[in-house]
Picture (cartoon, rainbow, N blue to C red):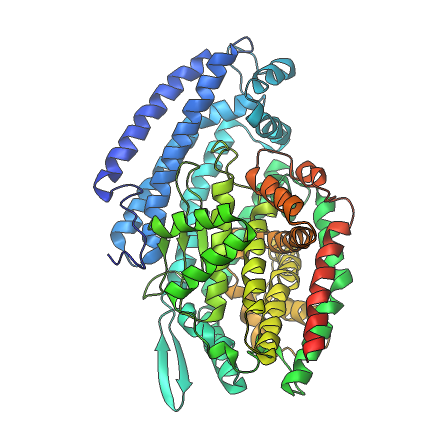
Length: 592
């Protein structure tokens, strides 16, 4: 194993002890099941606290076992041993959920012990014995109306593991086997994964961009029926559960999970519609600067002034990330150093490795693991900065219980957005020429567009797609719906070639985590607002940043933000972020 570029999963859990860890956890679960006999309205606070600590230990061990298998498979989707480990981990999840479920239902007031459920008075008494988890338990109790019977919940857990989860694995397997061919300087080049192809999608040469996109979309088109059938099945499954649980809409499932009201998400979408012309005008500006009269979807991420060819080698990238986070907060530089020294990052692309990047927060007691496909281009540097922001967020929230360690999705992108902005601003300041600054600003605003408007329109597509699939649509109808979505998004500012009607198949979040995508504009705009406040008053701004990132999911997100001056009921929180983007574009115009 290359210690400089590969993570070390053996330190998480030695493969030789994987089965032992499963058996040990099963013994803990058997004991926990016996301890549940002591549940009652009159149980003492000490006994309740002891049960919670047992639950935390079980969940932490389960997380380590699952991620040990999942991360192994992520780096080699053809590894049959890793797939077997994942299968064993999923079987363990089913077993654990069967034992933990009665306790969860009892917390919610839906499980009888000795012919009585946990009443409101005693729920308040017991929840108050662990103040840091009081919101978590109260919130779980409030979501009880969407919870089914014990047997129904058991069936759904098994269905998710053997059905939906398997379909997602199948999609990833199909995607990992795709190969991309591109003719460069008269020679055919073959790429094993999207990470290797990605630099060409943003090439300064228009014919290269178009060829790269066509190569990408061709592979998804070749497998379009498979992608459609998988997505169709998952959407129907999602909506069947929506009906069973009594949610008001498909997106409401995600909203409830995120602890936010439908109105707050609708307000975010409305704000993006209100300010969308900022980006439409930006792309017109880019078209004029590049002197492209027929500026189209192939061109929106085009590199400007040739700076895309500049490389940032891995060791240099690591030093820059550490330095830039240190300028925000010296303590963050220490956290970055800890991550780099812990061998928890898998950096480089290779055959059969999944595409993209992610950060896996496994336990408050452990550093998170980071998955990358680093090729040395500037965009990969920003991905490293982004995922490091997630890692810092996780480490700042590590004082929380594993039950509240992970932030809700609406706050999950806040730390990563801040990290990107800090790294971008410091690189911009150190750029050597006006042309390089222009290049960087064009690229950054394009990326911000991708994090806000592009993601909101994914959500709009999802809302429409779920309705269409439930009512029975064809793959051609879904393609056309996506194409119309793109045309509406750009409203004539960008020409949309027909080939992009297949692009929806390339978007993993709409399949793996329905309606996740609004977390990106939420985090981006909140992150920009926090960053501007930080620039205005560094001490007070850093206090806000750390206060929000420290909280995990231990507090009501709307109230948490309100405590720091960001009200989800108004559009001020979004307006401030868009105003910051407008300033960036004004700076770009002044340079031009």
